[in-house]
Length: 101
Image (tube, rainbow, N blue to C red; front, side, top):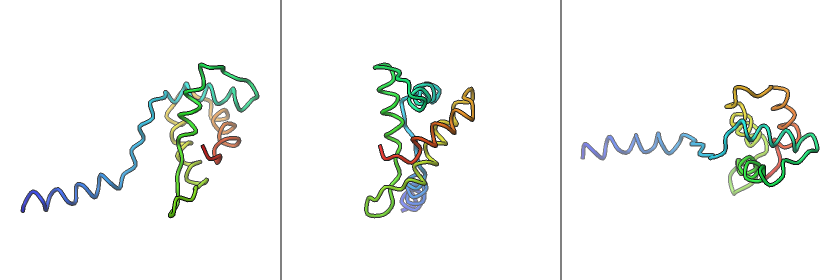
């Protein structure tokens, strides 16, 4: 009984927190997506990082796409690259931040 009382709140807390498990390096994603935003292509080397960026999506109730929350999640992910220029991140997000992947 005691274990159930402790396990229930712990399960609720862990289920409510978002866990971002993206294998791609945020700095690599910034580099490839900046190239895409400026009209250049990174070629086949960037396809997996672009795919990782566009897999970051948020949805509302009834599985409707939420562009605002998707933008925030992508911004947070790209912000993990401390070496990235904030203007580059802003350019990426202005072009692809609210696009459904």
